[in-house]
Length: 551
Image (cartoon, rainbow, N blue to C red; front, side, top):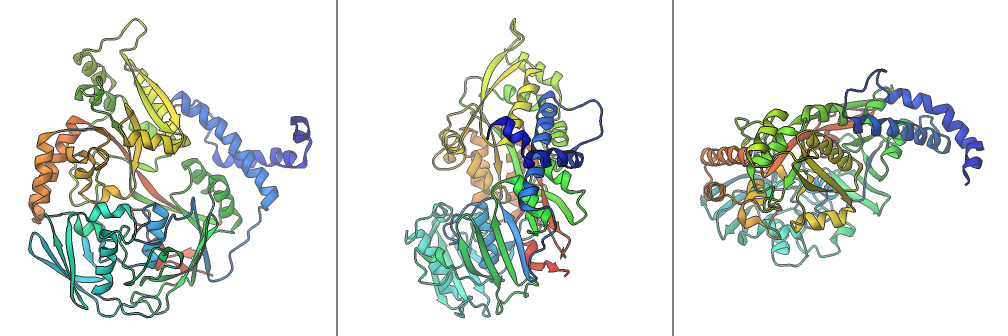
């Protein structure tokens, strides 16, 4: 439609009329913008665009309340789960929905310690043998009794390649699995593996019935509180309450996970009342606006998702820890959290979240200190040149708006200490391929769930974890770190592991192979007909287990 025709259209007239109402929801009090210039300019443009989109979409979809039918709760998700076979799916949606359908051997508590679940107890007669004792009252949704034979089959099908799964890497220390009786499972290891229990816990593991083949994902059968009903790709996943589950019966009869890729549309669906909830799926500005909707409620709490910057430590400039530390000191993290995330995040000094039993908060801090950053860069031999800059480095990002905006803010802050940051954005597939191969200097990234197990240190910082064997994509190498991680892996003594991990975190805080920026809060936006909601720092869907409908 030509511009003049559009401006004469009823849709445009309605949008212009409604725009002030929506802008008012987003707008802060008038006055000078104290944030970095790029944030102020981008937010101003974004507010106008979002306001028009909200207003224009209202006329198409209707802005009246349209509550879901009784007994059905609709949760909005950004994308379809890739595979609901718990042996295969590794994306967030697959793992979170699977946790409602399937049961793991153990579950993590609030400090990420493994606790009994399907396995009521376990022992390790020696470092290479784990003996699990299972419940005897668990049935799959089709009525079959769940036994150790099913757990053995689940692991064997992954290890023996009966199904193709990247999860096989997590179980490569397993030599064989035995099921001597219905309630006993014995796992024999090739070498000690301190991550075994976490790899058998919720979010990463689910027991399937023995004999489940490659097409199991089409109609998965588990033993969890909800059973699978249907899935339509790019539309929805429907679950219903499992009437004979061994767990407490959920209050909500039916869950519908509706796929809505666009964040603005997700907000509108919540405002209309045609959806009930979404978690960690709306920009901070949108959440801020929705706080003024009397039909919606926003619950939030500390989260574990870590936003960080990674360095290529093989780079001629970035291989110097003084340069990496200077960059960390030049970034004003509190200001970014306040301005970009509206305070819905908390500072990070370790890859592990503070609630974790192995977290060490007594490490070198990297608080905002541009004077100290300048001194370190001078000491490293990088004086300012005639143009005011010391050197150029590149930062690769995906085309995600949040990542690009973060990169631009960092670019502006590093310029203040004489570092010219060249930002280039790529489609996610290209970006991820380059990062995985170490073809970058600096890059922003996130840990979603992976940083809840202490094995993350081995996976991210051991020299044995250089790509493609792990996620040490910056090629960081430290013999003492390797030694400590080996010591932690060779013992089941929690105190000895804690001592090793404490020192690892102290070394990483000084060497700075990555900059731990902040942990994003878990933010749930929901209709007021939902109650008794208890959020997990992981941002999973466990809140639906005990949720109630007030209507």
